[in-house]
Length: 435
Image (cartoon, rainbow, N blue to C red; front, side, top):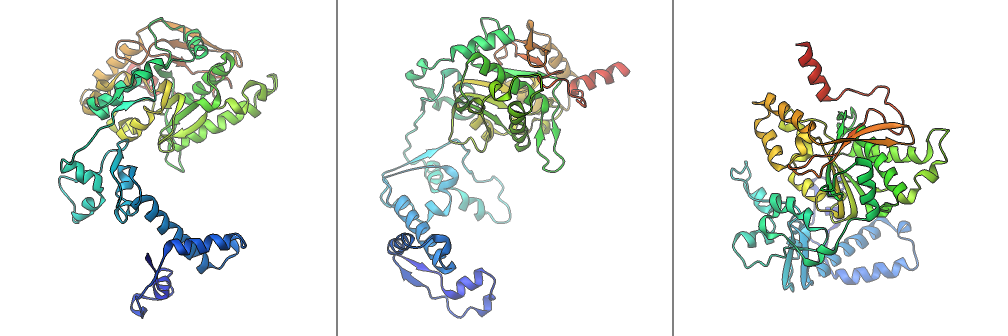
């Protein structure tokens, strides 16, 4: 049962009358399930779009209220993220018959601030009932075994987010990297045997992060060209299919850049090239997502592009310093994860923390460490047959004890960029030489 809004309340919400003009707040009591049955019967004879506005409004209200009551209050087990548990959907119809609550901890809980603002009740009301129960030491059973990905991928989220509460099930030992992908990576990067071809950091030389004037969103054309070329090589080697791959970027502008690039690969290749549809069919183009849109989804092969090209201050780290988005991006893969980030901020978690805390006070030391990181490891050539572009590459898996593959993106499958900007690293070197 529930109450329909009165006519005066509807007029007030639509701005037809003022608050002091409301004559009656009395509302009609109705059975939401009965109203929903009536709406379903009408839909068999009349299109929803052809019905009166009041009739449509009543049907939508009945659907929402009945759905909330049925799904939430009558559920035997409630599974939700922390933020949804704090919404009115759960707070108004909270689990009358629920035997247990499964709280998905992909997002950080809304903890109370140490120093509340002028309205200290606001953050308290935003804290879900489940979080309150956990804080009150209510019995909790942690489901900490993951069955999604290879065990190597759990090390970072375990260290950064979940602590010792996250472990890999024995079944994950049977997950392996696609042999065609492994062969392609070793051939393209001249990789050493120690390299894990399913988990490494890709540091793009001469990359430059820029900001879109209209949206203020960041993009990096060099990163895009390198990853698109990698996808072409993957297709030629017979690696993962398009529906098995995900490219995750932290910025909408970079996502749009990828989509335009893949369109050009298919439809606007040089005239001398064979038809684009034979180079990269639509079915092998990976899904392009942001970290927000990838929540709750996964893929066998995931490429995470952080877009940034340098980090002089903690602010320059961008979403690399966002635990929520990073946790989503680093837990979407099954077999392969490639992280595209500069070597100076991609070595390990300690280096990132060091950049945040000391880069302003000790910039010279950071630059020395960056130069040392770039000089490690053997180098090889990555040849692009479509544009005869040689790309220098070094091998590594992104750990502090190994080197990251580096691609010299001075040329790409589209040829050299006419107005390509110099990387921040080269600018610093030129400034030093002038001094």
